[in-house]
Amino acid sequence: MTWLRVAPFLEDAMDLEPWQGTRDAGALTGICKPALLASAQWTRPDPVPVPVSAELLTYVAEPPAAPGDQFLTGPLDLSPTWLADLRASLDALAAQPTTREIWGNRPERYWHLLDAVYSRPLPAGIAPRWGSTEHLDLHWGNVTAPKLAILDWEHWGRNIAGYGAARLYCTALAAPETAAQIHTTFADVLDGPSGRYALLVAAADILVTVAWYEATPGLCPALHCLADALLAGEPAPIRGRDVGSPVDLPVRGVLPGRYQARCH
Image 1 (cartoon, one colour):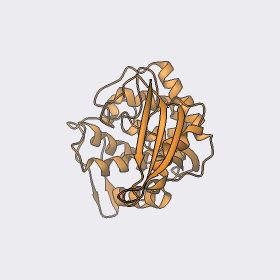
Image 2 (image 1 turned 135 degrees about the vertical axis):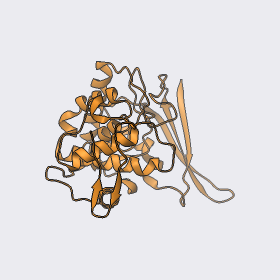
Image 3 (image 1 turned 120 degrees about the horizontal axis):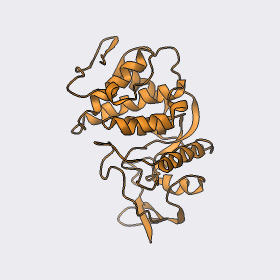
Image 4 (image 1 turned 90 degrees about the vertical axis):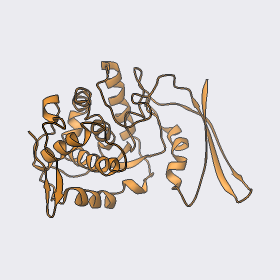
C-alpha cells in the first residue's frame, strides 16, 4: 500500500518551501518517516494556471499518537525502542545540511514572539544556536505509535538546535509522565543554551496558537510554569508534581516590562 499526496500551489495563500517540503524530505536519510517513492509537478491551465505537485509515499499503518490534535491529553506507553528511534531520527535530521527556511520560523519572528509574550530579557545561559536542520511542526499528531514514524514534512528546515524536541516536549506537557520521557531522552539538548531558547519559543508559540482554540486541560498552566522556570534561570520542570494543574497553579499574565508567573 502507498500514500498519494496531491497539493496545488496557491501563490496568495502559501509559501513555496512548505509546498515543496515533502518532496525535498525525500533526500533525508536515517529518519523514521515515510519514504518518497516518486514525485511529479505540473501546471493545471484552466481557469488560471495553478502548479500542482504529487508525491507517492510508503504507507504508514500505525495511527498518530494524538489523532486530529497536536497535544496529548493523557500518558502514552512509549517504549525504549520508540524513544531511541526518535532520538536517532532527530539527530540524523539535525546533521543533514539544508538551505530550506520557513518564513514563520525565522530569527526575527522569534525575537518579536518572545518580547510580545514574555516582555522580559532572557537570563544568561539561554541563547539560540542557528543552523541545525529541524522538523518545525513536530507534535503528537505528527508522530505515530507504537512504532515511530514522523509525518508531515511540509515544514522543516534550518532553525534553532533542539527546536523539534522542544516542540514535542511542550505539546506533551498536559501529560507530564510522557513529557518527562521526552525530556529525559533529549536532556543534553533541552538543558543547553539553545534548547532552553527553543523551549521558550515553542511555549510562546503554543500559547499564542491556543488562543484561537479550546485549550487542552492543564496545558497552558504547564507552559507558563515551564517559561517561569526558564526565565528565572532555573531548570525546566520535568516531573508531574512540578508541572502542576489548573487547580494549583495561579493564572499568569503579561504586564509591562515583566512576565508575571508563579509556579508552586
